[in-house]
Length: 459
Image 1 (spheres, one colour):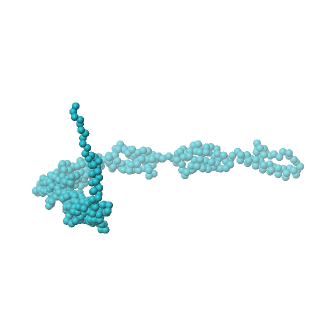
Image 2 (cartoon, helix red, strand yellow; image 1 turned 90 degrees about the horizontal axis):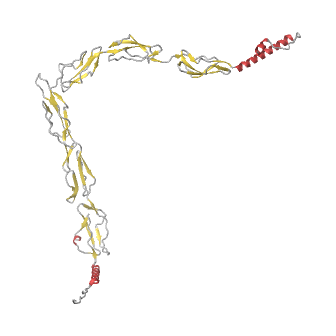
Image 3 (cartoon, helix red, strand yellow; image 1 turned 45 degrees about the horizontal axis):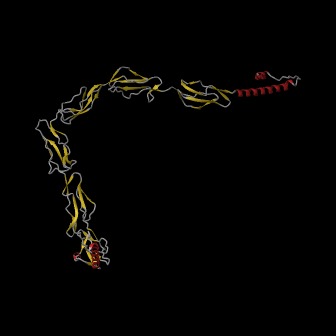
């Protein structure tokens, strides 16, 4: 066995270390007699000599000065004091950003400025047809004792185009430079006397513009100078109305008309085109004829299958038919191309009666008119004391005829009976009076005072 192991020696240990730390902290607290250095401000810095001081005893007051790019705010204090609690007195912001002047106007361009304070930016752009020469952005920065814009304003210059293309047998008007909106006009060269002249084909004037990428381009391709000749146009059965000449070149026009009795198929005006041909193609003149007019409810006089242009015919409507204006006859003329002047159809309306049927002891209570057409219906009623014999509603069927027939109004049986009774009474009284006057005086009596008239009435 080896010798016994000795326990490790114990030093001051952890308690001693903690004791020393507490003493150090207490010593530092007892030693502090001022504030720490003031915190740094973004818009200001300490004045001399405060910026180099190492300690700031209680009661020390320091002052600030605004940094470049900032300016003091009137009425705001720029000083702070170290208090007995070893804290600096609070303060409001006493410096604010300086402002640059507005950049101004940009001719043929736009300036976008949201703020003029130190550190802000201004951007530039140009209107259509112009482009920037210079920077497109400037900033408000420190300059000398204040602030100003970092660079001068740019310029908006017109977008340039390449010189216009040259053309064969022609020339264009020259300019000092070819920029946006500059126009040039082309013309053809002169030719010797007796030679065919050149024709300018295309747009004579073109101008400088720009594409989607703000590159200068010409508005259209340049024209061409070429000799263009069209033949002398002739139309059979027709003649020229305008455009007479020995020869025809580019864009010369001719107007035609047809001889009497012929009509034109195609355009009346044609123009000499760049390919030495007439456009549109020249017209033709065809014989003016018309087929027989097809008239409903009418006849054509004279009747033929074909009529020549200018020939007139008479149209007569059938019985009880007329034209829209009320006439029964009219004359029309063939205008060619199977077209008739003022051609109309005959219209046949239903026949009418000129009066309302007479109803003795009655009247029409519904549907009465000054005249009637086939299908019209009227309603009839009798006066008081009369009975209708026939239909109450009757329909007009033409030719002053009604279906069913026109009814009649007759005395009712009741009224007839009353009249008969009254007559009988009157007759009886008359007979009785006669009897009294003549037969009673002669001593003759008749137990039956009925007369022949009374018997007939009684029957």
